[in-house]
Length: 346
Image (tube, rainbow, N blue to C red; front, top):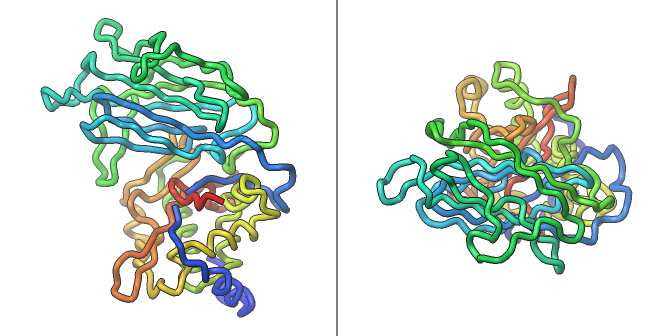
C-alpha cells in the first residue's frame, strides 16, 4: 500500500479537482512513464453488438465490454477507441445458445450474432456476422448482415482484414460464481487498424494470469491501495495505482499526462465529490482467497467480480464505484489498466 504520509498539498489538489460533481461512466489505458506523447487519434471508434437467442460476452484485445444474459435481443454500442491499437487487433465473441421457446441453453438455428466496428463519420466494418448452423454445430458466416440484410462490408477506412478463427469451448463465470453451460464457445476474430496515433492498449506487455494464491493476494493489495487513495482523497495515490489507465486516457483525450487525465475524472466522479461521505468496506484478505475473479479473455486483466471499490453517500447508499480491471508486468505489482464503464466523454 502507499505510504500513509501523503502530502497535504496532494490531498488539497484531490479535493480541489473533485468539485465538478457530475456522472461518471468508463475507458482503458497504456503504460507511459511520462507525458502522453504524440497526437491523439482523430478517429472515434465504437463497437456495435447485436445478438439473437444467445448469451453474449464480447472482448476487445482481451478487455470485456458487454455481457448480455437476457432472452431479449441484444442491441448495444460501446465506445472502443481506448481498447484498440494500431496494427493487429483481436475481437473475442463468447456465445451460449439460448433456445427461448424451450427455455434451455441448447443449440438452435435462431442464434444470430452481428458485431461491427464503427469509425465515426465513415461507417461500420463488419467483424463477425453469423447464424448457428445445426449441421455444422457452430456459427456460420453469412454474406448479408443478419439484422439489417445489407451486404457484409469487412474493410472500411482504417479497419481491414477481419478473420474469424475456429471456435473453442469457453466458460463464462458470472458474478455469483456460477459457470455458463456446456455449449458455450469463443470465436476469436483477428483484424487490423491502420491508425498510428492510437498507440497501444494500456496492458500491452503484461503477463497472463493464473487463479492462484499469489494472484489473489497481489490483486487484493492493489485494491487496498486504490481503496485507501479514494478514502483519503489522495490524488497522487490515485494517479500512482491507476497510472496505466490514466496515461492511456490522457492520450485518447489529448491531455498532457496521467495527472491531467486524473484531474478530469476527479472533477466529474461522484465518488470524488463532496457527496461522498464514506466507503463500502473493502473485502478482507481472507475473502479475497475465495471471491470470484473476472478475467479478460486472454487472462491479462482481472478484477474481483462484483467487489469493486465504491463510495457511499451520507445515508450509507452506494454513490458510485470504480469499475477498474488490473494487470501486471513481470515482477511488478498490479496496476489499474482498464475501466469497463468509466468513460467521461471528454
